[in-house]
Length: 283
Image 1 (cartoon, rainbow, N blue to C red):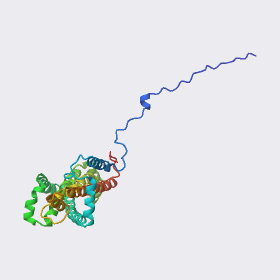
Image 2: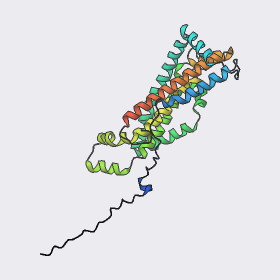
Image 3: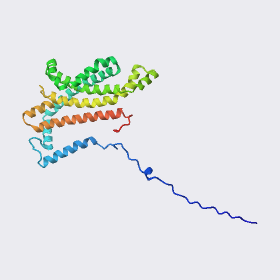
Image 4: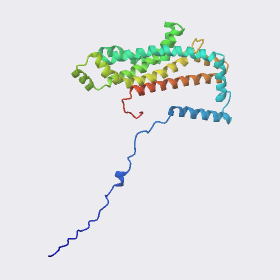
């Protein structure tokens, strides 16, 4: 018997060829994770520079008092009730004007954005109003409404409604017409169309206008409270100017700044939650 022995050829196992560029991690172009309390970093840095310059004697205490001097003045004004009364008065004025401006801006934007007749009647007038400096209307409004609280609230309302109208109307005009056709094919009613198409499409622009309106209400209040006012933060600052009290003026400015930052942050939080369905760079 003949035995045949077969020797299997040994095949070397080759390591897979890998491309370093393919394995390399792709660099992200997004801004990255949001830093905790990121909006407080800038103000904290400015406060630290202010304190450092004051401690080093680089700033004139008569023109720019040190932060601890301003805090002592604020504590004194708060203790004797002056600051509390002025803050409440300013909040009432800003709140009343903001509520009227918000309502007017949204209603006018909806009427103008959803109707060609409404757009013809409203948009041109609003654009004309936007071109006129709002604070330049103060003398005319004093003649019309008197020099009391009414004209102050009216000016604040105008400052607020213009950015809300412009941004909301722009968002409505930017809604893709294919969504309108889809709503017609689905047989949506007018109310259903507004609820499911118009409102979600207009919300991003509305929140941009809302943030601008909130800031504008505080900016207008600073000027208006220095005209025939007997209370309010602007009146407090105007009186301090007459007596050369720069620390009191800085107290008023810091309170305005805190109110503006808090209100803007509140709008941002609401916007982030309402528009959580969007995938944007900010979220």
